[in-house]
Figure (spheres, rainbow, N blue to C red):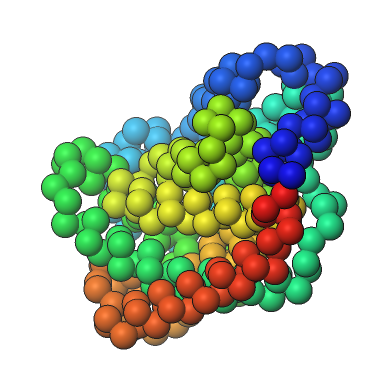
Length: 315
């Protein structure tokens, strides 16, 4: 049985109580995107008030002179961390749960949590994530040579300066907060939205699973608003989409996402205790042997992961 037919039967059972359950998938996608941007505007208003009230500076002034802001307030960025966590939970988590309710009449009715899979394949996920990181870094290096508009690059530099400030504290307590901020919360709530909601809808709209997964990955890259990192993030999104499609279990991409983002948090934390931290923003080409080795490990582990879940992946 083709997996699209199998999913169609499952969805018919699920999607009979929600307000938009009978609407075409394209309409459902537009509703989802509308929820994301609506919640984004709401959260932006709230967090701007939170930040400006705490630092007595408007967010526009902060973003115009982020280096000056970091020089004065770089030791106290907890409000920025809180704002980032609120954004992740409300925008991505809120949109995912609301859309699940609109589709099924249940907040968690659209997600696949308890599907039977080969759980031993979970052991392969860390190897996949560790090996894709050098590949992503190599892509980032070559993309950095593209002559993007100056405004885009300035926005990227601003975001990187804020991220470096938030992740650049060497204390264990702040590291724990950072791990929640960039690994735990995004892994759960971004996956619920992109893999749990949008990917099945894009797969149905396109009628081709691989194409639907690629479109979702590209949207996943766009929403992060990082020009130089767009391609690496999009490819990561495609990999997370394949993991979800092969396993039919949302916990797998959540675990993979957590591992990938968690490696970055650990990398920054370790760098704060060495002379490497000041070079974290520089993009350097890794040795060819590292990249080739990563490609070999990634190809092998991905193949074994797919093979261990072939029954579900092939329907």
